[in-house]
Image (cartoon, rainbow, N blue to C red):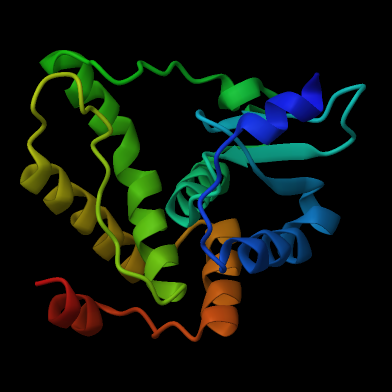
Length: 189
């Protein structure tokens, strides 16, 4: 049954996904007992339990960007939050009204700023995700400005430690540029 379900999941064919998963495991499995796992429709964080001896960051459909986004959330989550499914956070799915969308964007600023840095480190192009195709029209430009401002704050004051570790690992693996404000202003004016 489980094999049939796994076979029904459609994955993206990005050739960098397997190296990304291996890089995450090399960087964090030994120290944080956490693995990056390719999943189906919905991403989820699953703490270790009696059936799986390691924590799992499950990303959607094998999408490289989904993996980086979920890793960014993990980099922010504290030790106690990492013991809870999806870090114990509430999630309102696609179809949010304007108030719910603002609340969603408020909690997404920091992870998406980290995701932006990781995306650049992986030598890819970043685009914010407002993740609300069937709901209120988001202010994409305003959200992008808020995420960019947070990225600049991280550049000036430092990223969370696990984010720094993975940004450095991504740069080394994928030959990404060194991220600084001058580069960001040039590439993402």
